[in-house]
Amino acid sequence: MICLEKKEFKSESKRLLDLMINSIYTNKDIFLRELISNASDALDKLYYRSLTDKNVKVKKDDLAITLAFDTDKRTITITDTGCGMTKEELENNLGTIAKSGSLNFKENMNSDEKVNIIGQFGVGFYSAFMVSDKITVTSKSIDSEESYAWKSEGADGYTISKAKKESNGTEIVLHIKEDTDEEDYSKYLNEYELKSLVKKYSDYISFPIKMECTHHDLKNEEKHEYEDHKCLETLNSMMPIWKKNKKDVKEDDYDNFYMDKFNDFDKPLKVISSSVEGMCSYKSLLFIPSHAPYDYYTQDYEKGLSLYANGVLIMERCADLLPDYFSFVKGVVDSEDLSLNISRELLQESHSLKLIAKNIESKIRKELEEMLKNDREKYESFFKTFGVQLKYGVYNNYGADKDKLKDLLMFYSSKEGKLITLGEYIKKMKDGQEVIYYASGSSIAKIDSLPQVEQVKDKDYDILYLTDYVDQFAITAIQEYENKKFINVESEDLNLETEEEKETTKKVNEDNSDLLKTMKDELKEVSEVRFTSKLKNHPVCLTSKGDVSIEMQKVFDAMPNDMGIKAQMVLEVNEKHDIAKKLKDLYQNDKDEFIKYTKILYAEARMIAGLPIDNPTEISTLICEVIAK
Image: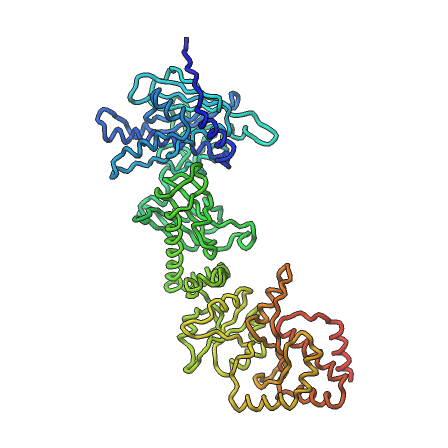
């Protein structure tokens, strides 16, 4: 007759158990991660004992975790060959929620001894109640000849009784819940699902995780072994690639790891491997993709690095490890120094995490700087793919990160006919040049044909062509580079005329003030109309006043909500062009015709600037009337 010793959880433990099942763990899949981590701890403890206690003899090859399932009985079984538990340890570790045997073991170790004990809180075991309605734990301690079984169906309590187990270690049997309308628990009784969970969360547990296989994969013969006429397959890799000695890892190994883990068909553009020891120790393996993911510039894209603690996946995408401007980076970080919350699902506010994130940001930036310096072709390929994200980082957060990123930016040079950096622009500036000239537009060809560009080119100044919507916002955030201010060629403050030209233009505007006022009154959208001497062949152009340029207005206009932000536009008419004479003549002799010309010239200036014409039918009619005369 078996004597069952019925016991109840303490009242606070009942509340904690209910809280854990319903609140602490938000992802039911992690129950297997927690149980495998506990099994790994038991194996680590036994191996440590074998090194420090001559009475404990263990072959490392005998240390393993076995996973099995029975669809008919609706059970999952996790077995380890670790140190096992005595009756008292079952009582203490499983009868009192949030009491951790692993934590006690870790605290009693010498400070200079290093064993990877994963469990700390003594609650991970109970995550199994999220998917099971009955749990049986049978364990035999390495220090005892007797074995015991702990059984529980949840918060009502548990029983402990003697059991029959020949070898040391622990066997956990979960009876999986019946399916409901909301939950499909039967999926955990599927071979593919269990293998996937092991691969996702526990692939780098340092002991083999074995399962009886039903489909023998001949391509991975080395992962299979035979025991009691059963074919057992090792499911986990055990040694993560980032923990291997770099000299033992080939470039193809990194490429294959990246393509497999991050579902990319192409090799990465750059691999960045780091091992850091100090206030916060960690290893990282980062990748810069060769192309942007299909959803990269959408709201669906999730940034972040895979975060591991001692080889156990904690977060699939830890966004806090990457700044937004490096969100394209993929990779993994593995650390023993992280402050985890009770569920190991989220990180507490952690100094270690912030330190790792800061180091990773600095490492990525330095690697990009090295690529720019030593492999220009590769960097330009990178920049054409992800340069917009760097520019976004420059002006985001009110330009707080501009100094970190400005040397990584590239823009098309009107003189060089290729992408150059701001530093390269400065080095080739003309003697006496005090500003950096730039022009904005939707393409290089369209910028090149702007009337304002013509004047700057005539002075033999280089112009940076800004073709991305974010470019001018980034330039505005930087403000100046090496004490050289940026100036838009479309700005009214271009100031390239000689003093004589300025005086002549000033007099022309004063002499025709009534004409210009009449044009201004007709064109409600412009803040001013004036004659200019800076245009060479073009009759008209639009320039802007203030901080909002015409290109910025285009961006604001394209946004779904009307922000009401408009550029202060100035219509400039070339005083040396025949159109200026025509306007003066019409103003004196035919006011109606003068108004028609005013509207047509303004429409022309808007088209040149890439702005829409609100009344194309009217303008088309006016052009036809003028041509017909």
